[in-house]
Image (cartoon, rainbow, N blue to C red; front, side, top):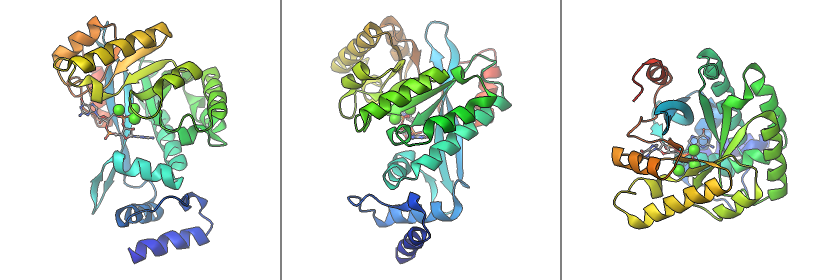
Length: 283
Ligand code: C2E
Ligand code: CA
Ligand code: CA
Ligand code: CA
């Protein structure tokens, strides 16, 4: 802990503003350890995995979500639910997101994902959206690809913080051809207000509502009315966390456009994802 604290304070003194905490945040020993590791090795132990999205009418894989993994040599695999909030709080998310976007674009070029008609989604935090240079960074990053193939999934928590700025940024992104989705719909603060305020093209239903729709009538009703609401507003819907075939059938009946989840595929290593989309029998 002492070492970690020293690393953080050295970094601060050295002017690494990205390690500055918000005053209200009290990192614990684990968090400090992770920050210290990140400070020493940057993105060295990070890689991306690819979770396919199934188009429910064509039953083809037409998209993929990129998810970040941190496999530390001694700490092992660290869950994104642990490190993403830490990076958001400490301001590190900005450089992490930029890394993810650069890697994603490189992978899209390497495997000609646009040319194959695949849409690729990156998770973007609301902190990224309101960061000063974000749009110009993205503009630069997408130069080698058709920007229409790239999409952002925005986690709703915090979107409201600076809604004027967020509106401006989302508008600029859509002018670049990049569509945005509201992620984790149904969790967090006030999902519906985002739908009325922001130019988003897609809604992602959180898996906490989706996974048991066959046995849970309340969740089924929530899913059904969320789909209807999205459609009334002209949005497409992706259901995440689909774990069985019966749920796929039901979602299809409800008019949901796309599905994602373990029954289709787990998040895959890059070469496994490419092998899957190359195979004639996709799922
Ligand atoms: P998310 O955006 O809601 O991503 C979906 C999560 O559900 C992923 O967890 C995925 O592995 C998991 N999942 C997918 N299908 C199923 C299923 O059928 N059943 C169950 N039980 N789980 C399923 P993961 O990869 O651990 O990511 C957790 C969260 O961390 C993500 O939630 C996202 O909010 C965040 N995250 C991951 N990668 C990034 C990133 O590159 N940037 C940012 N900002 N956030 C990221
Ligand atoms: Ca997501
Ligand atoms: Ca999310
Ligand atoms: Ca989710």
